[in-house]
Image 1 (spheres, rainbow, N blue to C red):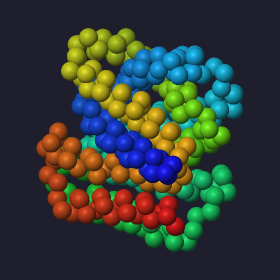
Image 2: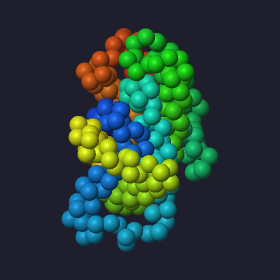
Image 3: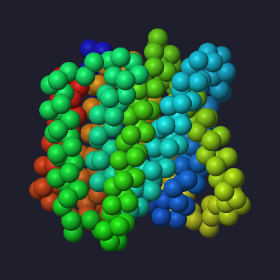
Image 4: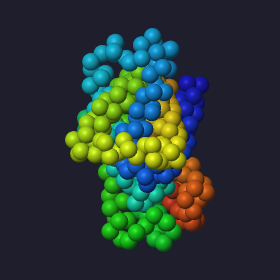
Length: 300
């Protein structure tokens, strides 16, 4: 029964990230990648902190061990900062559907990193899963002319490269997250720690670039983009991340990661309705093959 709960939560996270991906794309057209994520995390903190106060008696998990702050902080750097910045830039270049499909390769990187750093074995049968993931993704991204986001070959290749970089970062974040919540540590506290660390890093990055005042002025002039960003913040960093962290307490990293990476399937109708993408049979088949490969990778 516990496994079923974890699987349902992971699927809920996948749907949440689908909504967040589309919303970030719409908001990012006005705010840009780094400011979108930085502002989004502030909104997430405003939601997280009161809930954490009600559940744990403190707005910030200051009583958490320093080691957890360190591990979850590294997870935040890999996932919320490095991976997310590449992710949002890829959204603008190739759209959320293709970006998240390429993101489905993150379990491959997670498995490889878990082998190197945690000593977890990668069964020989998992190679078939990796081949299916890579084959499905390559089959989809090699189909041209169906995406309204394309602006030439160089932009398309740049978008694909950023999506791959984001997948690598997300793989690292997933491995670190699993270590950070080990021993039954609160998923809400873990999510809040990751959010706080990312806020500090991203706002420092914006300030060092000298764009803080310019970015803040955009908030009042872009109410619609701000509304999309609020939706993205609640559905992604808050709901999606919390559901992942809770699911990791009920099921394995492999199962949780696999089901969370079904987001590209949920994004197929969203891409059609929100962005007018022409969804071909090849796109659907390639997506299903890639997700099947992810499942096989962790079932091996």
